[in-house]
Length: 405
Image (cartoon, rainbow, N blue to C red; front, side, top):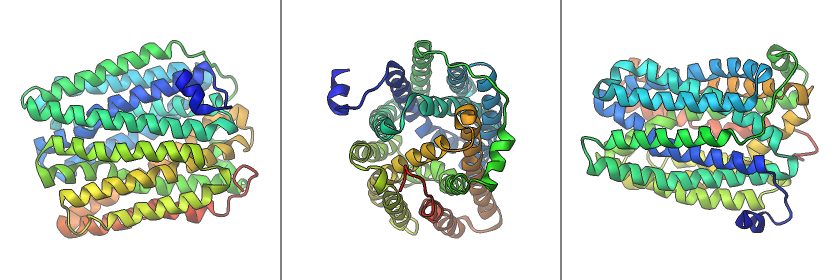
């Protein structure tokens, strides 16, 4: 607590803000322990890009559908309960992975569905709680500090997991997935200390969706998040497979993640502290440009050293882009029609656009590897969808609110 006080200076924070940061950090550590290696775990069983795409497609299809249901439940029940349900479904995902063992490839849609449902409940609740618990003057700090916690988890988790898996060939994955399960259980326990936040009123998701016609800032920011999803959909799994193919070692993937997360920690720490609202648009442009240029480091020559340079580059670029983008997004929602009553619906619609981008990304990947030569089509596809983050600036450059100009 005293460390946080020194870091924050004059910025005040509540018990719920601290708990939300802690839950977010534990979530990140659990995900970084296991999720980094799930795609490799499935790749080792099938060796097919198509199977990985189907698994990840199930995730990004079920996630937005769950967001719609979770949004309605958050209006009728409680945000904290929805958060807890998300963590429980993520735990069920790891239980299923543990039970399926060497035949996990037979349950790709089930596994992807459970993960997507878990993500949907968790991120709906987490995003709404972030909106409610933070204020405009604490959002840049919260997003930056949470990013730093995510980076710490990303530094510790993959290296530990890679070491365990590489040393214990037969039982390494079982131990790693079990550790993630335990961490999710801790997150559930911590969630009981969050103040309950019930909601009232009608669920007006369609009205919020239609607000895009009259609220140009809302239309622009949802389009920006679609472009964000366009890159994320395929890149979220293809890079880890490239690292494994180029080295044949899970420990090398852990090292890749360590380098990436170490520099991300530095990036999020500095961005959260020094990039203010009047820097946001330029920061988003710079981050998107770096993310696109980074693709050229490996796309035509996939080697481990090149991928490590890529890890360093995106570690610097992502904080520069995401911290101001997230803060800008919350500011726009905060000034939108009936923001106080319909904040849940705004989060749902935002995630629908993000996941729509991810679905399009993976469908394009499936199309490319099905109808064209994989070695030739994948690099071209990555250059095309990889421009997603760079295109964000095209949509946010005309956003005008007092918070972002």
